[in-house]
Length: 388
Image (spheres, rainbow, N blue to C red):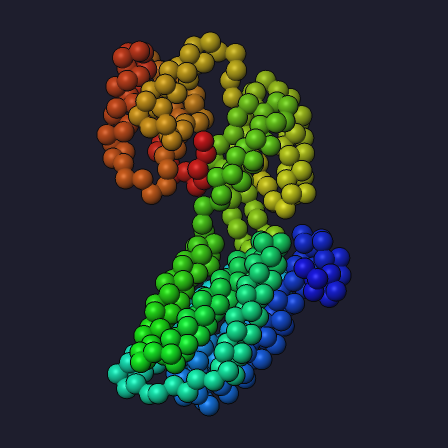
């Protein structure tokens, strides 16, 4: 991280948007310079030797320079403040820049595959020289350094765009090593592996590109938060005095440093409403220090009804017996003339294939065995996070 120390003021303050933007700019500038240098060296050697794989590798570096320009612009646009049209800010531009880098990887893979296939169908003798070895070895070493440089920077500021750039540099290390091996083997044997090695490298790059696209598209589509993050949020909320439970947690990611969350917090119905409200305000302010803009809703719960407590415990046993991932909340008892309604919300994992009618029927039957005059009024909803 020597470059960060030299060129980024307050480089340790990675939560600062200005510092974060400086990391992205530094990575982009370094990427543009190094990749243009590699392109110039490889394209010269590739033309002189007649190696299609070296030429393809050269244009791969040129596309990497374009990717660095996109990353640079992405960080610049992501640092723009919120405005009337975009009240949640522009931080998702960083995700978009990572997506464009991933698409560039796919384009390079397709182009390398086609040029390598043409070389197999129309083989040409490749001239081998010491300069070929020197340029390719230096390229491997430089790309190896760029891989770790972008990886450490990406981890430092939790940037998917920089991690995608790091993965692209890793692909370049592998592809250039393959080109070098093909050149050496072809020179010392009668085998012309230039095109075949290009095909193998192209397939690897395409496979890697698909993974990168998935990694960069996921946060744009609304990827579920990390279960560890969910556990930490739940643990923190439950640590405050007066909090009896929580549910309906939702986490929205509008880009690095722009996380929003909401949850329902259960507190005793007998507690002073102003005191409960103040506790929730304190929780929201504390989360803001951690980078989360939290909105909490107060759910008053009855705590001094022995029968309700007994029914709640029975429901927990019944529902866990069906599926340990299921949760319920907002349980209330509504006495009627002929029966008592048990009204509650049942949370099931998102995307799960369940028959709601069968699920409700099973719960009602199990409850009726214990409490014949009780009837369950159930609202089934999908969970937005995985809570254990």
